[in-house]
Length: 429
Image (cartoon, rainbow, N blue to C red):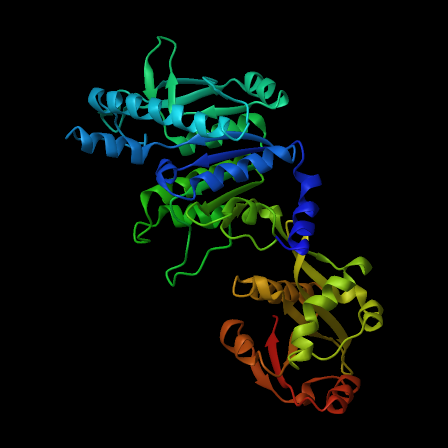
């Protein structure tokens, strides 16, 4: 580990200390060579005074046991109907799985308890189908779990529950993780999955909003595995009900848990409530981050050179887009009074941190700048660009214009710069 990596981790420790993380592990990962490293990452979280609850799935284990016995198991993920034969397989597979997981955690000197903190009831009849031994969570014994966590004991919750009559019921682990997180007011739910969320082109989905997660989970043509669709639905519900952040990470990758949690860029997908991503006015304390962000674009002549003093002089015109409290993009909106009356706005200093490019942040800031210009009474907004003019034309609806649209003073500084930037303009009304 490099020293800068360690500094990055230490930056997050104070905000995570004494917070509760619910970590939900897909059962298939327990057969992967990387699983021991995942458990070590969980041990690191606890060593940093982060309170961890472990939930695990058993789809792979139940499927494997059914194949071994030459039996057909239905609803191996705990979402559909569970008949008596499938329930018997589930109990056997999950019992063995629980024992192995506790043994692995104990080998890491972690104190763990397998908890029956879930109050459940039969799912009943849904769309005319009796779900038999499939259960739904009625309540969570929050107090019991908190007592364990405060004693540095890690609760482990299998995807099984017991109703008031002592009947064992099969549960969906994704639902368990979210219900426990809501009861404990957890800071995060982390779904450690068999695969990660990607676009149709194979690009990682770094973060999505609750609305987008809901929409993606509804799409039948997405080709997404049912396992990931379940996590998306539960993640959207969790954020909607008060969990600030839900992460979905590919558990087959090395060091995925720590890399997702202790870096601004992450390696998985974060589903967030709307307040996660916000645009705000820049402050003097943001100037070093703004200059760092802009430096490469200035070096490549994509942005005009700006100094600290120049930014401070027009501080009220600058805005930053924050992700989880960290500036990752910026834009400025300058306003000019026209000689014949009216106002003209300029969109300037648009820049996105390299690690956050191609995630829609630039478009979000352009739309924000346009709305800001409207509120200031401007009828048109223009931007100067030497390299990103196609972005403005094709994605944001700007058209190439003559430099004469600018005010006299602004035209003079444009000519003096010698950059020969294209002038792009858009009507705001």
